[in-house]
Image (cartoon, rainbow, N blue to C red; front, side):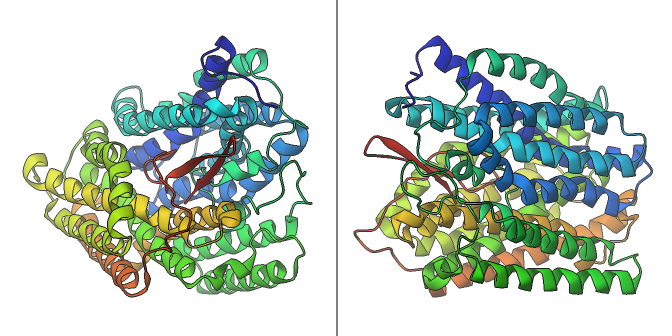
Length: 525
């Protein structure tokens, strides 16, 4: 049984290792957006390259992250985690040295492979190593330090972009790996074959930043304690990732690409998605058990999730560019401008979950998206010569209040809408919906708003397209609010009531840690 105590020297080393490893992936997820305008100028790249700089990482992470968790369970969580850290650092070095846009995009895709190996392993090592009495506190500390990293990330990224240069946003991962790997090899016990709850690493997949349809949907299927994983659903993972990749390609390349190629990619992506559904329906051990959607509330809340996180993904992708290209701020100014959303989420999300438990989720899931929509409409005031105090801060505060109002109740409602034995797969599907929605939004918004390939080089052109994008994001949030008001109902009195206090990432649904019969059940919405 796992028996490391948190207060022991080994316990502290394990916590340090997991925090360092997960911080590498988390920093990249929060700082790259701030660096995009400078990357585009230095590499003489168009808007599509900036989109791929974000999405290449998310696509490979999405396609391989469940495999990374499964490999950790079979071959040793520490071993796969260390390989992931080294891989991620090597890919980061390649990003930092990239001579052109093509190499940068390829390196970002390789980063996603490393992220798929290290991200599930960081939380799985806690699950597999700590004594059950300390596991909840260890996860909380891991999450808390991750929240600090998420808050520091944009500030640090902006400082690096304005100072040493955007390449250091990626090169920063190398010294983190140099510290992390020796500590892991010396102080972290290997955990393969140990009698912890089966699928610890796979259950951690849902916590990852960027988990997607083919990946996170396979998290935790309620397997009995002590069982090894069933064979990995390779065909399902491949089809899910392929569908997402082809649709994303079609959306990004549509403005300037060949009509035949774009149309072919779109049709092939839809066909791959349909094949994925067929394979999962017929598979004896599918990644995504489709019968989970028999719960109308579960289905409805995931539709709300799609709306909410599509808007969030589009907002955070475009706003950092708007503040630099149109308003004229430095990368550091743009990175710190959005910090209040992070602070509000970290400070108030747990209280929001408690409020929703008393009044029911319907009101928070209706009011929250409407507040977020209002915040995005307030961003229409952010143009040339905008003032932070008068224009940006009010929008960011309203948006942050909306995020606080809806995120924790959204996750709690998802987990409460299915049987407790299926909480793992429910949380994975919800995280998949969130990540996939953000991914597609980054690909689709420039197309839908008429943003040209060179728009980010012109303050006037980008400002016009940004305004249309904020209106579109606000409209999607209103649709989510209407869906929530029409479909969400208070869970049954005897259902599982998640607290949703633990955040692995500010822009990802919260994790859930529950003490039950001496073990921690981890889920993330």
